Image: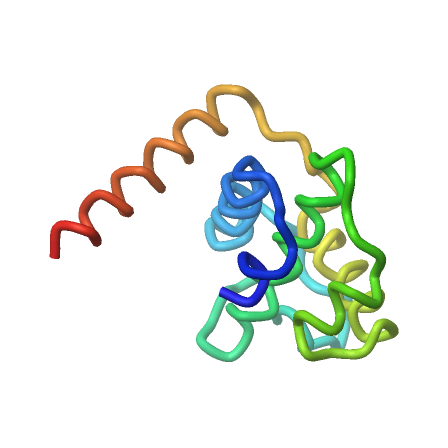
Length: 125
């Protein structure tokens, strides 16, 4: 919610971040660097790392998609971490994705439909 409130990312960033998180959850990413457990051990999403992974996915998506984005220090303050930690975690996140950031049009459209359906279902509850 803090990211949404303060960062003014384009809606496409949320869809792309979701696509990347699905890739990691499905095991499509690589194993994390040896001995690291800051972002995700063995590329798995857990209750202990989901907030950081979601934050890193959004920051990376903003840089990848948006023409205008904020400096690292601003994103770090939103995430409640230091700039150095953000830099480290962002590199590790990109490593988990094997630096493959491209999302096909079909995957984007499918993920957008999934998110819209989830939003519709949650608002009906």
